[in-house]
Image (cartoon, rainbow, N blue to C red):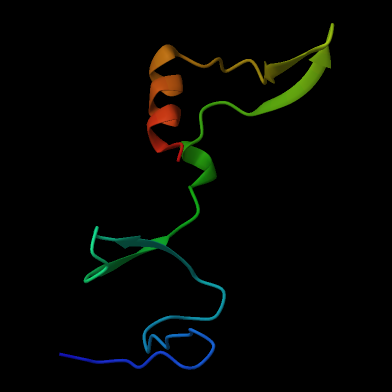
Length: 82
């Protein structure tokens, strides 16, 4: 088992972490356990549709590149939304 000490600036050194890496921090209700999950970038080839947002008639609308977005894509996106 490895231990680590938090410094006076609330920093914790992870020996296996590289500079610039991003982690999601999750704690349980009594803060007795902390879970760190490394965040990775999505593979661009896995993204089906590219979108951009425009203002039209006072509303913000999403314009796709023609690949289209299904209701399943929307559900998956909303599940990942914090």
